[in-house]
Image (cartoon, rainbow, N blue to C red; front, side, top):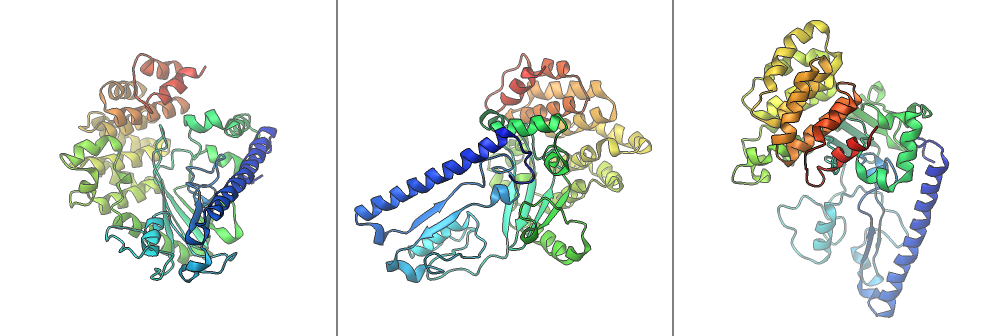
Length: 427
């Protein structure tokens, strides 16, 4: 078992089944190749084999480490087209490839010009691009759960920036808890106190940054972010990640509930590629917030008066990430600012302010605000409120009965009905 999984019979059974399914998949691929041979198309066909994400077990799919983002990629190129191959049959190619490179590579194989707006680089064909220095990776909403994580992976290192470090890797979202016995077993072991530090980390608060030297840490469990021997690599990776975010005009820093408000008559893509999107400023603020450094609190309080809702959102998120770490004296200045945001023109800002105020002691105001957004917010604003509601209950800001009362008589569309069903199933 990987070291991040506790050793239980249920988890071992899931792993054994997973390996069995890989064996079955190998057989099925063999049948496809046999069909090509029998139809006379084998010598004319380039075959790609890949998956849509990393492993299917917990800490696989939807996780930004290698266990979730590294995928199989096997390409069979017949001898007729061997001049288009980067290596001989049976050889490994040690280059970084991203999924965005697949369409560009197919276009290149076919001799079709690659559209100018394609981000991908062709890794096959006569006009192959230079190998990538890194791939850009991201984690956003997973069904009913929100998280904002970005990463870059080089041949030797993975650098991760957790923009919502107050949310655990192992958020409770319905799909894996329903279909994976190993997910339930792992969580049960954690709640029973039978996980070691490595196994428990999945269910706890995330660090703001992570750095792994993959060659010596294949499971990516030893965070080397503070190791001085990697200071130069860390600086380069931070710069590379920021460049990717800025170049792609990353919309992941915009809460989904704000899309209509900001996009107006256009699309969120149009908005993100316009001067109206202050991404450079937002990224700087989000980086500060993810650091979890209380010295930035005065900056957050000042930015909470900004006319732009995204600036107010990330400034308020900075306060939420600090939470109970905010010293008693500083709370005197923070609470009035947070209370103002309970009446913000944007519901997403209200939700973050409410969760923060709840942690700092004003539970009644927090409940009233969340209840209002649940009733009157759009689909995504209500979903953000549901997420906050669940974490407020877990943090002791409100009782389970209070959390249940706020969702019991409301109707939400998929996937917004999942957290209410989860809350109402708890005892």
